[in-house]
Length: 146
Image (cartoon, rainbow, N blue to C red; front, side, top):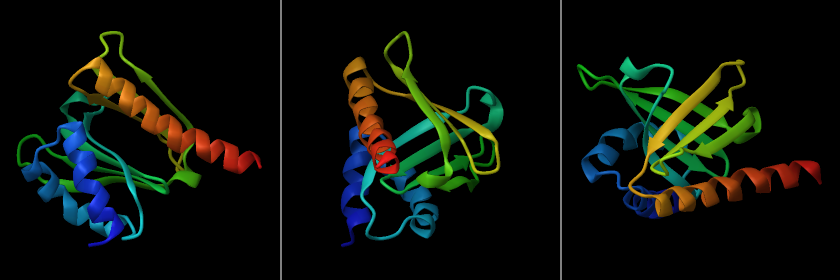
């Protein structure tokens, strides 16, 4: 079993993503993520600026951010974003006031600002996910500065 497979399922379980949902999205993630990449974060999310667009699933590794979309009516899957972290700029995230969501924003290489809101189960999970994002993106900033 490769590194991606070994780390993806525990990350999905940690975020509370159901196995059937993970299974539906997995073929798309497999095409985008290298087998030697470690999964840092998995989560279902929505786009606050496009509430009727359906649900999205986000996967973050140390090298890539991949987001798939599932349409509301027909439940069709498609790749929404597949970006190397080097090609993302102005990456920010913030927990919601209620402590049950985390909003992630980034500008893609094409200049489009992407915003995603992950609904999480409790403030402890929000804090944990915040730490994971900090680990990936702050480590990248330090590596780029050096």
